Image (cartoon, rainbow, N blue to C red; front, side):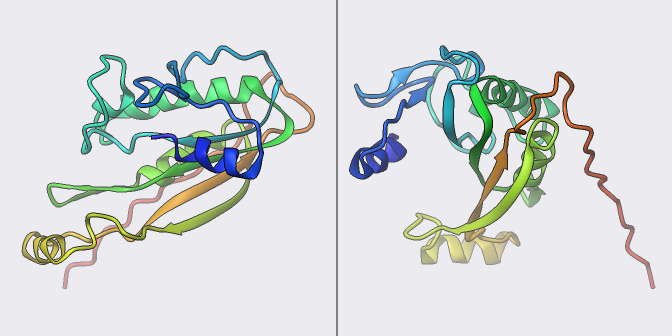
Length: 188
């Protein structure tokens, strides 16, 4: 929606804002899987990507937000964005990725952790910040009642994942793996 662009203007910072389906004339139409910038040319990147297909973002046929976050294809497409970010980001500079988890039809998908796992293939972790959602439409009696009735949580935060491109570029992705462990409940 251009919030980042507005903040940068207020702070006197140079900013280029891309969206696949822009809603304002100062936002450039572009798919983040193919960013028209030179290698190692950007000092900072901020991404606020779709969290899955639970929200209708726009009607563009290539919109990643039309893919369910329960599908690995969703993360494969976001990884293409990560590779582009790695390509254009200068060594030693940072990327911030804002992402939320998803509860749909009583099923929880840890979107933020899955995105973090993919980011760590290319970037060094710096920090994970929980950003509190204020004034969200889910913070109403209607949604509180639905959450109680249908047994799901109202997520009150998003993750701001902060990662850095290594000073010394490597041709190979970073050899980091996050191991997911499955625990079974003990039946009494």
